[in-house]
Image 1 (cartoon, rainbow, N blue to C red):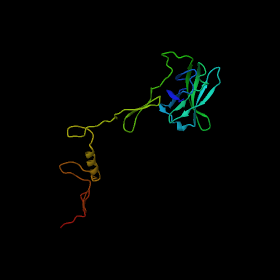
Image 2 (cartoon, rainbow, N blue to C red):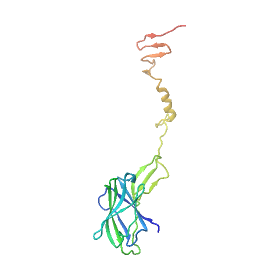
Image 3 (cartoon, rainbow, N blue to C red):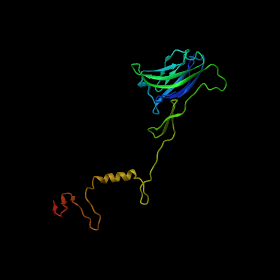
Image 4 (cartoon, helix red, strand yellow):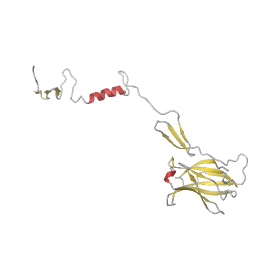
Length: 222
């Protein structure tokens, strides 16, 4: 009998109070899996940073349970065992992430309710599609990550343009205009004043040097 993922839910690892309620049916074990997506600060947690993921369960009148989860890149899959769904009850649950020494690094609490009878119209499965984070990718497209781990991207990308500079309109320089200024930048090193008779701090033409005080060096006559 194959195990199907029927419930996907996001869990905020920064929240200390139970934040979600998962509904199961008494006796339904080994047939379905819960995919838990832990986030912190609105970002998906990278499971490569943890050695193990386990489900910790507590319910009055039952032995506490610690059940291994199967880890993916950004999720942990939990398959309810017979001990969890043996009868209608309510469990205090935690998804705990452990380091290599078996110490709890992060824990996200929620509630598991096991129903004895499910009536038509009862909701016993949930998928959390609320948005966990919003960002732009390298192409300028909006990227949404849901708490269920789904990544959504817009087809179009964000961009804007500026009008080029003209004789009558202000705007941004075109690449050609910028290149023209760059070409001149290494050749204009004189203090030039625009007047009927321009003056120069100094001028060099070939071997001829006209100094600021009017003296001439390197002049040759033919």
